[in-house]
Length: 112
Image (cartoon, rainbow, N blue to C red; front, side):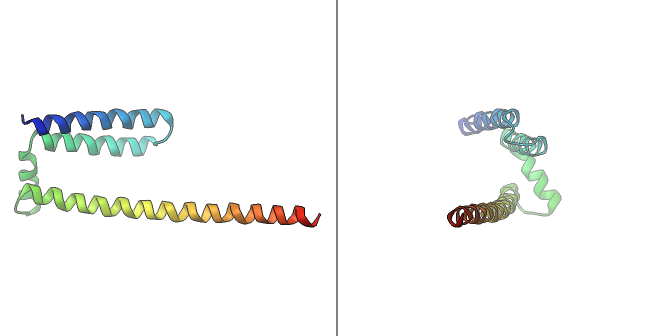
């Protein structure tokens, strides 16, 4: 096993542990935690056994295993960006609502 594989596998183990702690802290839901743990385990398998990407590539009709990883990574990144954007818009709407309510309360106190 190459040094880079060992380093990445240690990082993945750290991320799995961090995910479990985030679940215990209530920051992540069980569903989110399972998704992330499955993701990290899949990444560990791909790192530990690089030939798995070649099999996946042949199954999907892609030339090389690295191409499959790049395609899947790009799709995952765009999906996560979309989720972040939607969450940010929701937070902005909530902040706007809170600010409006606070302004109305302050305005009400000014006239009383």
